[in-house]
Length: 200
Image 1 (tube, rainbow, N blue to C red):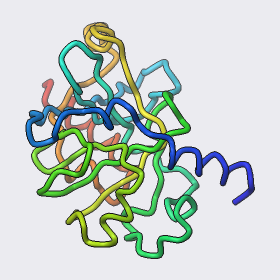
Image 2: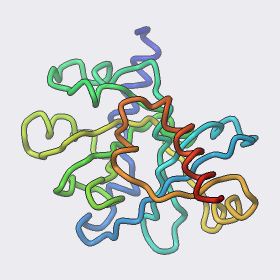
Image 3: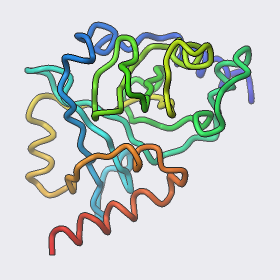
């Protein structure tokens, strides 16, 4: 990995994700995650052939989420060379979206809330805590799996609703198995098939 890429990734790991760091306790937040599935004719290259897990952090704010099916060439242990215990299933870095590409966001599959996190599904939390991999490695948080995303997708209030009404997206219930699917390349075609079958 070249020096420029390493510096970029280092910034991504240490930069805080303020909306999540300041969020209320996870346990009191309703699970409200859904999938946005880009339609095959999506004109925006940022979101073409993507599946986005979105959530509404708090009343009055716009939704935010991460693209779950866009793996990058970089690995999480490029960011954390001193942390030797990163499960292979968690080592892949993903491009989470076009906003704040110098920051990292984690999705954690766990029965207990991660620190400073939002509850997205019953057993999935979203957090910007840069210490998450170390906490899992030390056994401070029992997680079945976690994934790291550089950047995120965000919308102003009512902006996303307008895009859905205009016909740019399919909307599907989110589930943890799809978020943590081993083959990211297969996620978008499978979600398009599921959405079109539901529509017929």
